[in-house]
Length: 281
Ligand SMILES: C[S@@+](CC[C@H](N)C(=O)[O-])C[C@H]1O[C@@H](n2cnc3c(N)ncnc32)[C@H](O)[C@@H]1O
Picture (tube, rainbow, N blue to C red):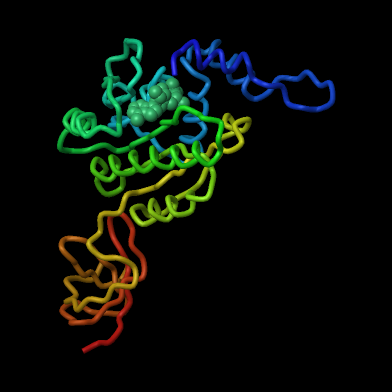
């Protein structure tokens, strides 16, 4: 989507029905604001609202923005992460130079392995803090086809996010509501502490569009319900026993240092988990 096209879509925005009413739609409002405030697309406000709601960006973060043209999200992310951060934007359309030192762009198709490899290389070994995707398919007007294609793009974004995000990282992907949404949402939920569906106010006129937000990537070697035999290493400041499973810390109440216990995992967070004793030996 080019700069002009995105703004043109704002100009063409339908007015909120209401009999003979002639008030501004959200699309007009955000289109005008974007123009006044120097954002390349009104979608910039969607990302601002997602960040306010879900707390995505911090100073110095590395952000990967998939489907980044014309660059509204790049502008918002660039401001939010500051000079010490980096945002890498990818699109198969050309992204006009942003003249911001913390923004890099790649021209490529995110369904191509070559592009994915280039993104991995740019991001480097430490990975990214946040992966965001506003990728959208070319619309056919046939609802089920557009939905299926948007789910496919969101899954591509999830695949990239799982490669780039270490424990604690966050993920955002646009998707059009429909029959495959719940499965996608479950798959995001499996990889993060929790998943939310958010419809930012700036998306309101586009009724089927929503964003899945996966918060705090989990890379733990255990899942809820798993059982393990473990030796209690230590007792933490809160009085819970500390068990290490492949370097991952699990807190177990009611045990002492040196105890050998069978534990069942009850909760898995990105950087630690909780368990209960099943059968004390
Ligand atoms: C809604 S626009 C993104 C707007 C952008 N977030 C902004 O604020 O300027 C969706 C973009 O996704 C891109 N896109 C769709 N499929 C893609 C793919 N497979 N690889 C790369 N970009 C893709 C399109 O070219 C389009 O520019």
